[in-house]
Length: 322
Ligand SMILES: C[S@@+](CC[C@H](N)C(=O)[O-])C[C@H]1O[C@@H](n2cnc3c(N)ncnc32)[C@H](O)[C@@H]1O
Image (cartoon, rainbow, N blue to C red; front, side, top):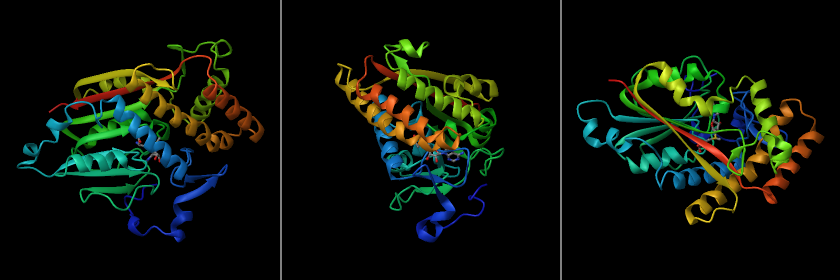
């Protein structure tokens, strides 16, 4: 389903439209456009998006992107062609799109999401649209965007190779693709945990396992984050594909002040994430009592960790061949 083809006026989304865009699952408000994506679309989740956005800025050295964005979006590149354009897929609260619109006022920035969660007061060069991007063909023309950015939204897409094919189709030759996703496997004391019972964070691992199992049941490939670079490379349309990763501390254990700030933001993000996956667990048929147990055990490990918890962030950037 795509509301881009039949767009509602988002400046006037009122209580009558509420049922059209939102439903309640397990006490949280979720989107109605895509039944596979069962993460909430409510104020608590917006708080989490903001923490995530600030954390990634720290990780990227107070920036919102990787790769030659300034060069690609330089005003001199706009001469003699259409306006420069940026597309943010799964924009959430729209903070990345708004920051980009502020930083590049000569560029049109569009954020797309399943739910109207974005603020109304935005820079003039920033717009938001509703669309389920988990579809065979994205409703955007070929070769029309200079930068395409998709961050932390892979669990809303079930055919990732097709999704990446579509992102490449809509990217202009010479344009930049940026993909940022977290690995769903937890890290304890610097290693992916292979034996949860011996990991020092069994509750944390059990919840991560259930999350991966529920997503897999819904047709989501949970190995995509670690393989994004390879999948992009396989498309054969890029000159250069670079995949990097960083292990992000979760908690208050780093000694380095910047890493400590990242760890604190990551901890706050995970504290909200543990509760945010409740609708997904319940709608996957896990009984309420077990969901409560899983969440409480994960919270115990988060609040009283016996090991250093981390999660791996994968960052890909690639330039489409001319
Ligand atoms: C975890 S949030 C990330 C928000 C933002 N990209 C960020 O990094 O801060 C994931 C967002 O992707 C959106 N999303 C997930 N699947 C989607 C789909 N199939 N089509 C459109 N948006 C989707 C969700 O609605 C949610 O707002």
